[in-house]
Image (cartoon, rainbow, N blue to C red; front, side, top):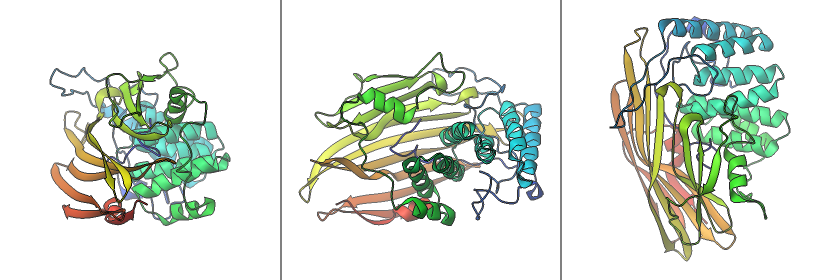
Length: 406
């Protein structure tokens, strides 16, 4: 499910690396060459969340009244099966035996349901085997479950390749641009240059005469739910429990049993999608939880332009094994305060800055770090992002500095 106009905001988490570098494939879309499989630069067995594969992993226990989640980790046998099939899939990729690689990654997903890297590898292998339907589904699921921004970037690039090969040029361009937003990469930059300079960012969310719910469902969920969810299709209705921060605008609520998804979309008076303002999901077996909510929505006039500032907070929790001991678990996650800046104009609403993390606290590998940014808008329409404290990374480096809003 998409949390923003292009893709769910990047969520960062540590990955568990088991195995040796000699087990890695020769190249991958995660490597500097960006020419092979979706996660070729990683060590074997990143054991992460569950949710979108067809697996037989352990089941989550219900959440207690305080919101804490008790989970059952994969067994040693599941971990061993996962590693065995991922290694076998990589071996097939090295030999360009794509059709033979596909079932290996599918078996890995039986062992660890919804694993982000196995889904990414499955998508890339299926694409090279010519099965674009299976490839696209795996790529979209990988994008949805990936909590590591590099893996999400790989999956977006792989999806873009599938879209390009199936003549969905506009979709491919959006996927490539979203991949670059998470991780700068020369190969992806070349793909963007091959198709154009920017996605169709100003294309209306809804064409004239279309119903908002029809547009929202097609945009975020596709025409149907994933396999095994056909009996529980997503539901959409205009929200009554969440109010729009702008008079005359609308909020639409979409929910689905699959992953316990719950989303609230803000649409302007022209039914143009502005931003998600509330939502959450829980991946199967209780290993990943993400909740976000609107803190405030304020409208002010700056330099003669009407500016909407939306502030949300996002809480992510990922529970995963930290070794072969089934009871040796660790919890990684992040708490972020995000700001979206939109200009409200006669020609429609546009949001040149989306989900800027002005505050982010990460828990990873037992360590806690915090990064704080400042975002100020001057009368000439320049939004300036400054790093106040904490460490920077590629995504923050791209944000820091001036941004012209008009």
